Image (cartoon, rainbow, N blue to C red; front, side):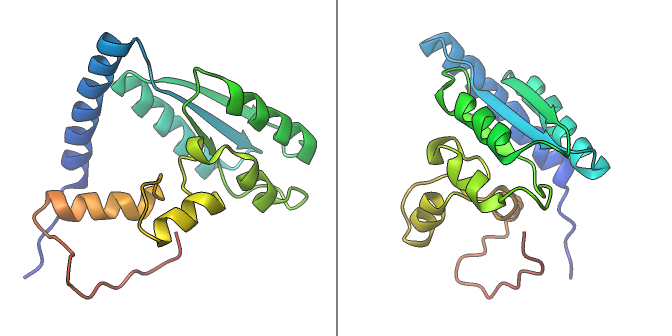
Length: 167
């Protein structure tokens, strides 16, 4: 029989745990995690996604900043913004919302992000580290699915799993 996994309940539990860890990090080391979102263009789905992630950051006590750029932004302007976030000590993670306009080389943008701040886990160094089993930032969708399975008592270890989609 199928079991329904209550994703909203698990997400709420995770946010509470992360919020407590954030408060402890701030108390012990004076560090507030910072996340930068870069949104190019006016795609409604992307805007909703980034806005919801910003709200989650706020709920967990993170510092976050969203930079919305026009669809006409140049490759160089986008690279310059990434470079700013790469060296900004208040920013610990960078998320460039995909897809990007056709005139922007998405791979070059991904590779410009400091791999240690690549929260999507798309940087080639993170992909390589993931493949060989080293510690790295993991792509959020599969990591989230794995967390949902584990927290609901469905350990996928040793089981045959089918993943539908490419995200």
